[in-house]
Length: 197
Image 1 (cartoon, helix red, strand yellow):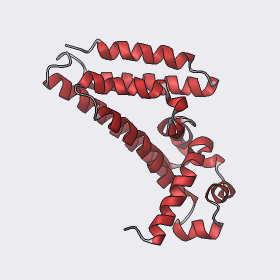
Image 2 (cartoon, rainbow, N blue to C red):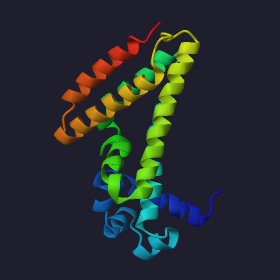
Image 3 (cartoon, helix red, strand yellow):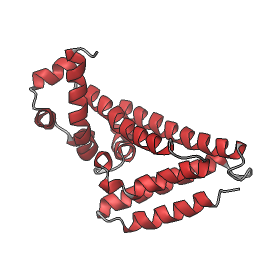
């Protein structure tokens, strides 16, 4: 059973994670963290060394929510094509998913942390590599089980899938419209179905 300190730390992470995802690291102030948690600055600093530490934990939490959601949907799929289709299915509706409403945490963080926050940038790079490796595993497994064409370039397809998703999410968020998102997810679904052996 978690200690009171561990529960408080988790509470702070869960309450501040959406704020960081929406406002970004630079745009989130200590007052925002106080407002989100209802705790004093002293309580927050009693659990985290500084805002950086809260931001890093919040990124892990935000990205973890996406991974958990996608993984749970993939667990119901019986083949590699259906598992890959979870991606466009999820991001097609990202504006309706509470943990993605402010946008993809990976995209939001990578844009902001590019040069200004090396530790946050490292987290985003690791998350990107994790996502790419996950997609590659699904495709490789599909090839081995003869569900996906053997000549498929695994690494290239993973990069294309991720780029289409992130580009469409950026446009949808910027325009507050799902039109480009729908077009891109339809196209991605076609690409995925064309992998079928």
